[in-house]
Image 1 (tube, rainbow, N blue to C red):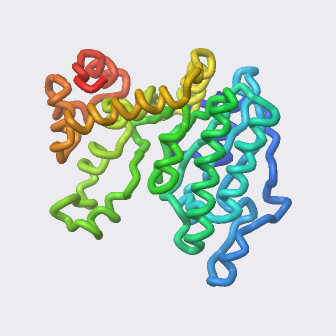
Image 2: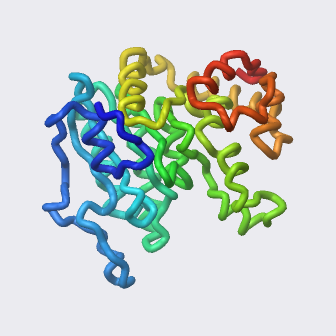
Length: 298
């Protein structure tokens, strides 16, 4: 595994750096030239892989299926072909039963140029994720990219078995600019980048339980986290009971933090001393500080 920055790498570099050398086999690659049927009609450029790399490989000898979104193409937006490739990968997982499916997310959500097709694709992806998990195969979301996981892909991430993030990653339903446009700058100032990361960034998502692991910005760190999750993974015997337990935790979290407008307020309520300093800490120091917190909703 590569020690290169996950954030700075593109989709193919992330896949190559994460998996065992020479083990990756791409499905529906650029040579197939299966591209979006909609973009050309709108005078928009296309990509021969439609902004997503999917295939099979091994992670320290463990067979996995993997998908990596290319955030540099249309912000990683999900369209018809992009979504079909991801859905097909998940359906293949049920048939071939790898040890895990790894989703390297880098997306602002649905591709607005083909919104209806993208929305349908998101729903198909979510259904495929849940079907894969129901078959006993874990699906892990790895988020440490420039676009993070927003919109429909933010929902997909939370449908996964577990989420791993770096400090640089972001996870949310609505993006900061969308919130500001709809609700006004008084509700959320998208230009306040520190606020954006305190609300959607990896550190905050780890502290409130959305991400099970926070890792440094290295490809190998994401790989080691995925391996540890594969080794310790168990799907619930009763999926309905697991969902009910998750809902109970969410209700408790809303009761505890529903009035907070900034991550700092949440962290203080968790009993973290010097919460103002958390954004400045390196990942290892941050995790040490986080171990001393008190989580009233957990």
